[in-house]
Image (cartoon, rainbow, N blue to C red; front, side, top):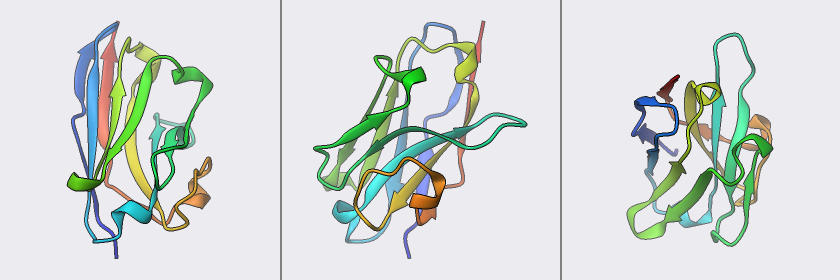
Length: 124
């Protein structure tokens, strides 16, 4: 069983920055592929960014390329999402997810465990 706990969400003005953290339980964190998804009211849960087990492979949605950075720290069992130049359209609940396959995942179905989510609100 893997438990994921997100933190770092909040209210920020457009153009600002936030860093989300996702702390994972379990001794095999280094084997998991990790992803960040977001879901706005009335919309589907969409991929934001993902990182493979080694950290050597990453993926970003077109809407966040150049603004968001995903990274992982094996010593802390934590994955991060650095979000810069935030826009009102980035407002959503952000979820962390773990894929036992260790690979990059682009769809929710690729992931096995989910955190509870953290709200990010960007004001204009």
